[in-house]
Image (cartoon, rainbow, N blue to C red; front, side, top):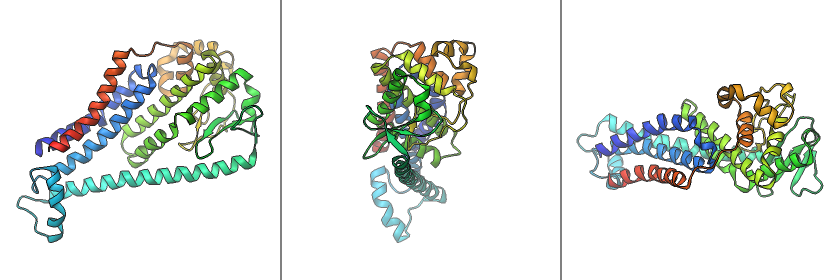
Length: 339
């Protein structure tokens, strides 16, 4: 039990700091964002399981020689007040911390899902009142707003929302690319993943990796939607649309959370108005400072990725990463079952 607890604790530390930092700084996720998303999910689940499992296995050491038998014997002993010899305050503290942490994470997930769903329903009601259908595009609504905005609202009746400012800014091909991007979010259910990572971040706001993971996952789902969109249009058209929206002179682009997603997921990016032009010019103007831009501006990351596409990771590389993700999930479970 002690060796399992120490191993789980070490695994929790590794998954809480060096692994997410290395993954967030890696370049390969942009080549295979779907694989990277699976790895992020495995890190989050395995890290949480390892953290809680380490506390539980350590706390049960005086109660039993195994995890399952210890969990079965613990309630009668606690209610009877007859604790075994060797059970000290540190063991009770570990068990209490594990229970509180698990309850905190689950409760926060429930609160985040409930709050997001309430916001989404309220937003949908307002959109229904203030919008008009876009002719020729079923499930697409137009808001009378000068800000170039595009986002999707999942739910029982999914809808894509565009603004008059966006429609007037983009040509028909660029508009089709944006609509395809937003519909990809709906089709691939990205809102579920974003809610999960938003819950993790809000549950552990003092945990820097939770914020880093949320930022990385948000960008990866945008890349996935970009990939789906450019299958129906082309990379240059989509890049031009993103560059034009990202460089529009406005300070009132709506900031949305997990309730909705936008082709430009930020309130107003720090891209100068003189960058407006073709997407190629937009990308070339920023070539001199790509490393800095990549760390602060998702618009630049996405435009450059579309204009300078790289080959997807090879099949052996993707297979190896998926096997690593499976191993990360299996290792803490195996340690707990054999404890």
